[in-house]
Length: 279
Image 1 (tube, rainbow, N blue to C red):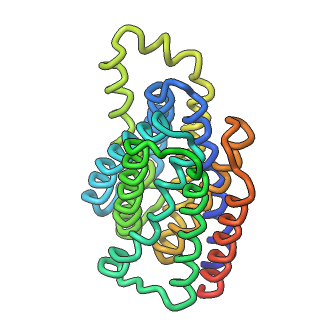
Image 2 (tube, one colour; image 1 turned 90 degrees about the vertical axis):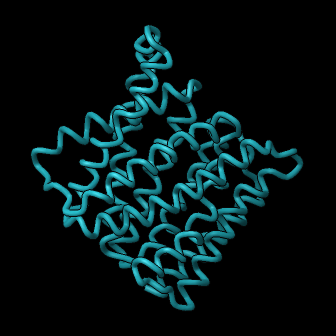
């Protein structure tokens, strides 16, 4: 985790929080995710003439399938719960889940400092969500969707980490991934909304395409980082986006934040410091 890699992943965290905030702001979740996914479909194929074809095709194909499940689950999480709870629940435990397959498939076993940093970071990430649930009866469906989203995140983290390393080009991998997966949600929206799709998409087109650009930038930065550092610390650092997301939810959507979440954010910062020390 060099300073350059750290800065890239933190920038990815901010841009990731940005597109999540845009997706949450658009009330019709299918419209929001259609525009963000469709924007990726525009960006990815436009880059194809200028990037190499990935050397290991099973990885982007598998990743595309997992990303489709991830987006469907995330859309459900946003619909059932507020973004300040859905995102932390979804992302809080993902880095810990990544640790096992990263050790098995990528032979990346964290040392003591890194392990402590990952554990503290996940505790802080989960705390952002769990303290936000105090005094409220949690919706089981919302919690279930968020936890399933976290599992999908862990799976595509490992698949993409291995895939981008085998592909030989992080930019090429992202472009082909966007091209492969980008059509699915727009196609579903066109089928679901039929003749009303264009009318529903048009008022949010500019905002949705901005979200698409932020989404592609965020994931491109993270994939590049995965070629330069171990998968689990990158995953934990990237999930600092939920702190930005919780602040965004408090400022723009009037969702609760408060002192407990500030303390949880402090745990995250300490965990990041330990991971950097390990690097």
